Picture 1 (cartoon, rainbow, N blue to C red):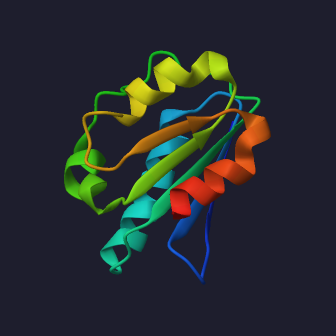
Picture 2: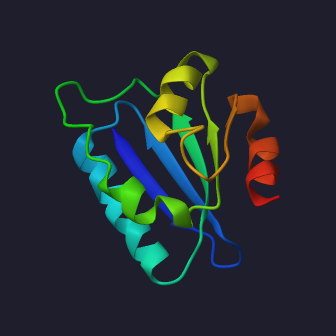
Length: 120
């Protein structure tokens, strides 16, 4: 599993690549990095790319919603790119429909469309 974050210095885009099984520790590290970016005054637009995604670490405590309550309103928009089979679970995980930011889900062949949507 790996989580890589890249902040575009010329736009509000924050691109997050998640590969394999998402671990709680990897997710927490990404939340910490994103929180620092937000606390610096940014309102990022997230482009999350799932590559060979295999779900979430079993047995981990995924009930911690501190980041969502503390920083979630500062995220402007979220586009997720991944295999169609993960759409429902990923939208539930991200709180789609329960957060202010719109969340869009795109299949891998629509990466360019997802990037345009999240920046639009």
